[in-house]
Image 1 (cartoon, helix red, strand yellow):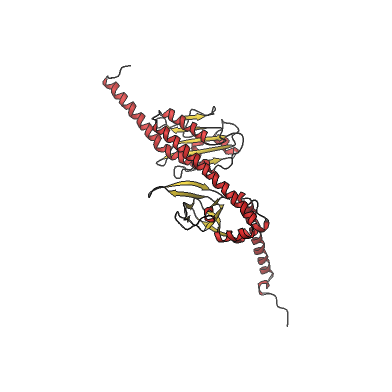
Image 2 (tube, rainbow, N blue to C red):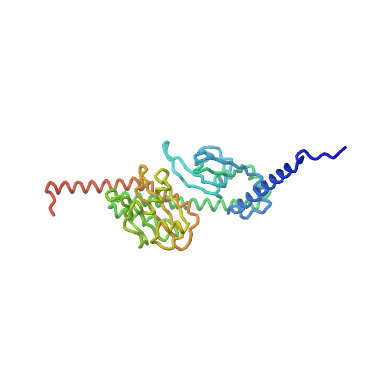
Length: 350
């Protein structure tokens, strides 16, 4: 009986296809292993533990706006962002919710499922198109039995990460509280803006300075409202300034969000008269889809790391400022109008 080749390998083309598929799977496996190993929570995992973890992972993709889990859902999985961004939010009233943080590649969320059977305390939603891994708590319990030392170190890392988030939340709450106090003081517009940027620079670690520009509806320029450790910036900038054009091109009026820029070429184009900036943080202030100002923070010495909490803090502050700025302007305009009326009536003399 003549020798028969395996049906899968009946042709050299099929053999090459099979080889390429196996090679692709192997490359994906190695890429996934490197990705996992680069996450701080898994840096102490042995190669064997990494392999077991990867074997337990489920890969998912989602579109911007897709819900990964809702507040109140059962908590069965731990998640790892592979690409894109995931927004974590919490309902603060039946009609509104607050964004707690925005997570990027390598971030872990839903980790409380490993420790508790309580329902989810927040909602996770894809902010952009995203890919993520998830692992069921049973898979982690099995991994813990087989690799207790590695998993113990991972849990220690997750605990430290949770403590850091609590510290960041405390800083954000303290800053929001202090700015609420400034709003209640009835300060002049100029004093309010200076106090706000001073408080923000105090609240953000490792920042060298900052400033706030606000729209002047009479001149259509953006005027410098306040600054900390800034000498080179213009007192006002026109709507054609590279910074304003950059924000317009980013369409921040539709979806305002704090931006972190660490590309020296882009920073140089936006702020050509301020040399040697390593990190530039821009928080656009938008009201009714109109750019009414922006907060700028900068670092000169080095590129800052772990800035997601700074973005969360500035987004919260900007939400406070939108109504406060309009209220203070309205109040000062009313005072000026009343003063003008009294002058017209002759009750005030100069």
